[in-house]
Picture 1 (cartoon, one colour):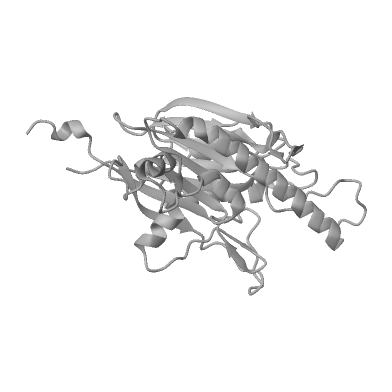
Picture 2 (cartoon, rainbow, N blue to C red):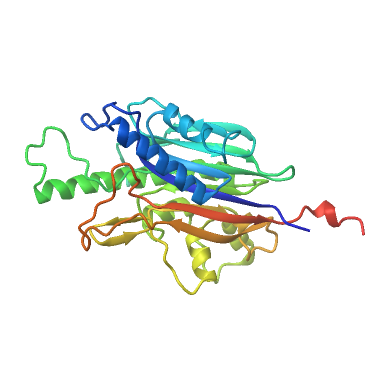
Length: 335
């Protein structure tokens, strides 16, 4: 009997803004560039062919609605955008499956403290979206879509020489502090869904750091040490998230997973992580990740090529994980 398979993806749209509308104070798309951007996004969605897509950098929900409603794969899909204002980028989800519930997180559940000092960040730079999705009659999954603070330096407006190396260094440190605080806050929120759950949890989005970075590992959690007692390991496995990048690397002899190129560095900033219910090494799994693909052939290494990424394309790759669900147990109950 054929098993249920679904695909879940992450897509940083790079400033999905309506045409002739200012964003970040001075930029805007012409009607021609906007049309090219809409067509390019639609083509990428066709290539991805994902049942669930988490989006980042949505300024205008109307633009995302236009793309999705005109796409043959998503004419009847459900669309959720986390509090779009048109002024700032946010995240969203498109799902071919029914959506059971939606929750948006803007503020941290608690502030991060370091040796009695409170880190002065209380909210996410972009909201986090939590969506419960019914993928089959028997299985539902909880999907979190996040977009953490970038590495771009946070430099106060009153700094005159914004290109000074020390000002850039301090600005990067501020960005790192915010991204670390966001990662810790997201992990705190995730714990409510990971502990004592009855369904898989998936976290996806542009986390603006690679899979081995401290900020990313704050979100996924640390694997238990090999010498821990089994009862301790089981508790830690229960709240651990697994990078599909690593799952794919163990299944293939070649790793070509990169989602962004900056100054000649090929980085993995866009992630999909799954809880143990979707990891094949878990004997009690209800499914498994069978294939992961990064759609990165439009990215250009500008240190080697005179070409540039067109303004209507994204500067990030799209990532899709194919997940195979196990057959429901009741199908084998009577024999």
